[in-house]
Each structure stands twice: as C-alpha cells, then as structure tokens.
Image 1 (tube, rainbow, N blue to C red):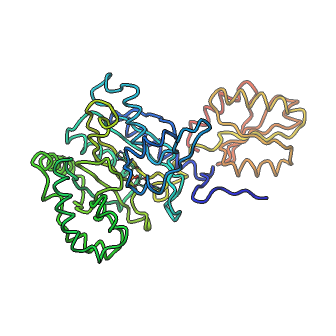
Image 2 (image 1 turned 45 degrees about the vertical axis):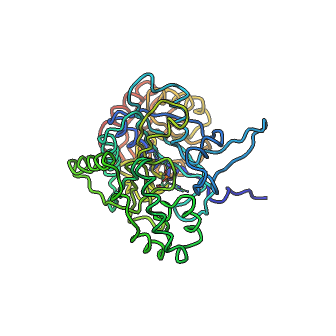
Image 3 (image 1 turned 30 degrees about the vertical axis):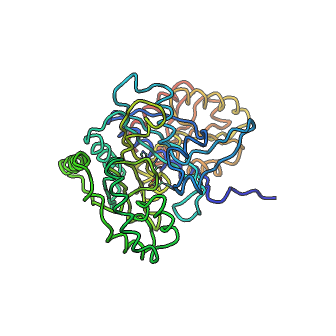
Length: 422
Ligand code: HAM
C-alpha cells in the first residue's frame, strides 16, 4: 500500500530548497538590519488563543483550524498564523519589561484547513514580523518600507501595496452602523455569506470576492470619511512617510482583512504574477490584542507573507547563487584506499572544504561521470598507483587541468585553488 502526503500539504524537495534558503537568508539579513530579532514560538497552542485573537466569526476560526484534544483532554490547535503566539509569548515572558519596543520576526509552517488550489495549501509557510510597543506612524511606514526593500532585494516586480485605515474601536463602531444601514438596502442582491456577515461582521461584506457583490461594495460608504481626527492624522502621517521614501501604494477602501484584531493601518501586497491567490503579504496594526490577553497596553504593527507564494515568483539564478555544490569529489579506485579516503574526507571537511565521495567502487569513467554530475569544482583521484606513490591527482573539473597533491598538501592546495575563479 502506497501512503501519500495529505491533500494540500507538500514536500519541499532538495532541488527547491536552495531557493527557499536564499529567500530566507535575505529576510534574516534585511530584517536584522532594521533591528529585528528572531523568535520561534511553538507550532501548536491552546485553541482559545486563536479563537479569541483571530475572532470567533472569522473563516479561520469557524472553518479552517486543525483542532484536536490531546491525551489529557486539552483542546489544542496547529497554529493558523503567528501573531497570536507572539503576543502570548510577549506577555508570558514579560518582554515589555526589558525594552520599550520589541521588533520580532519568525519563519515557519502554518496550518489552515482550506480548499487546496494553486498557491493555497493546508500547510504553508509564513515569514512574519511584529513590532510591539509603539503607536508611532513611523513604525507602520518603516515596516512596509522594509517589506518592499526585501521584495526588491529578491528582484521582484509587478507588486502592488494596497493600504487602508480601519480606524480605532471608537470610530469603527460608528462606521459599522452607517455601513450596516447602507448594506440593508442591498441584502437581497448580496450572496448568502454576505447576508450572514451583515449581522455579525458587516465590514467583511467589503471584502467579498464575488464580482456582483464587489460592485455593490464599491458604492457603500467608505471608512476614510468616518475616521476620528486622531486616526485620520495617524494615517496621513503614515502616507506622508511612505511618500518621503518614494514607496508607491494604492489606497484601497475595500481592504478590511480577514482577521478581527486589526485597527488603524492595514495593508496587503498582491502580485500580478500569481493566479487567483495573488495576496503575497498582509498585515497592519493591532493595538489592543496584548491588552485583551491580560498584558499592558501595547500598540503593535506587523505582517506575514506567504513564503510558498513568494518562492514561486522569485527570479532565482541557480548558477549565480549556488554555493551548495561540493568543492571536491573523491574518486576512489582501489579497495585498499577505503580507509584513506574516509580519513581524508573527514580531514578536508573539518578544514571547511565541502567533500562528496563515491561509495561504491565503479570504473574511473562512471565515477568521473558522478563527479561531473555533482557539479564539484575538483575531483581527487585515488587509485592503486596513487596509494603506492602517495601522490594523488587533483583535477579541476572546469578547465581540465590536473596537479599532484599529497595527503598533507591536499587541504592547503585545494583552499588555494578554490580562491581562484576557474
Ligand atoms: P494572513 O493574511 O491571514 O495574515 O496571511 C498572510 C499571508 O499568508 C497571505 O497573504 C498569504 O500570502 C499567506 N497565506 C495565507 N493562507 C495561505 C494558504 N492557505 N496557503 C498559502 N499561503 C497562505 C496573517 O496571517 C496575519 N497573522 C498577518 C499579521 C502579522 N498581521 C499582523 N501581524
């Protein structure tokens, strides 16, 4: 019986991993330059952490969580996103006590029971960023600029940064009522989902993907006209700072996001190079979540980007970026050389040289073919004759030149040769 992977989850194979690692290394490099530190929360948590933060009436909590009881009867959930865990960790470890602003990022798998399709998985990967402890508009702008810097460093084009403000709890409550009374006139034309949203979470009507509903949504009152002075001024400052950095954005009054914890600035980045699932990143402010979970008042701003989607559109030149091929491939042609090869491989690796070797003793021709296939820069050939003389052939696989080395001079010579271009 063949057992296959679960629907909607996938293996990231060795042939793809270099690209993933390259993208991740750029994230480490750029985020750390902006003062971010990595955090690694667990991948499962108590269920109520997610239901209370993301929101009981959201799609994620209502339909998409992988929830089960563990052996002690505790209800636990595989994390559908990272923000809730970071907030829990922030409070649990009193991270607010050590520093006024915490800048954190994480990379890892998330789990949502969604209908699988291109770009939508049940286990997918996110890179997330959270700044905790400041309501300054410079935080919103700086984080979005950092994100666009990151995309630029990856050589991406065709991206759109869409941005909106959802106001604070006070101005949003007023807008919610205004919106509800406008939606009321269209209930018979709107889809079943929107009819439900109208009661429980009317702002989500703005976010419906059905074309006829989107047309209706486009004519509904917009939140920008109902922000309080403070929220208006915060948002304007964010936009001014983005302008000052020449970061292009589109104001999108229909952008509300699918998680309940947002307030003030919210944003999404979409790519024209993805199909229907074109959102590559989403985020925004969540100023009351830490307090809601019993922590001190801590305004926050963050985002998460979908790594699977990102990796699928990143232009990546394997030749240019590959540092993963072996430096040397040892071709062993004599049984008596086994121990010698084993020791030599160990010695070279401990000196920082990447070594690959052959494990079965094939002919010279077949072993050289393997050396070629491994993309190794050098082949070290050890046969009966070489054992007798103590001199081995080191062949440069790019230019074909060959020189003699001994067990003692091998590492030094290889290091010297590896520094040259050919
Ligand atoms: P989100 O919009 O739910 O936000 O997810 C962020 C990104 O994760 C999406 O834009 C998308 O690229 C990717 N993504 C989501 N679901 C899937 C899926 N099923 N398959 C593949 N990719 C997916 C959040 O998760 C928030 N925690 C972001 C945040 C952080 N807000 C503040 N801080």
